[in-house]
Image (cartoon, rainbow, N blue to C red; front, side):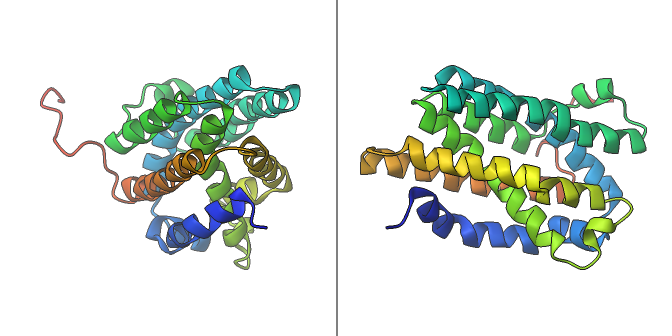
Length: 229
């Protein structure tokens, strides 16, 4: 019998495969990505992770059991102290302080993506929170493991640490726990609810592609800020 997570993966795998073909992601794998583009991603993703942590915290409050609460608590800690530290380490190489990272203006894609997740996570019980956060964690692990298959990619002097982070056994284990939690949370749910959750995972998968595009093109907002100097 097909699990719900298997159903989800069958639906989003073509979208996730397109990430690997995206010039930004491919550039990380080959080590040829323009560092100004990575810098733009870095600053926007730092803001993204702040709201992503809020989603994990929401998971703690909506959890129906201690095991779920513990996992979301771990995800709060790991995001704040491990994943965001990787961003701070990279920022330091660009001469960007933590204060500058936090003061970054969010791009339109960043604003839209995090707003979508926060909105839909509030619409139901814990399964809605899991659906909202699942794509980012799972697809980054998918990308990290794929790039790690490229000979020498994880040993690159600059992007190697990024690949190591998202392909690591620790990150993979957290991803798998989240996937298992999704399957457990939907037990006994109606097809209407399953479809609503699937739609969240599909739309966040499209948002992930838009985020790579935003970074590749160093996008902010389509209309220039008339007050900017």
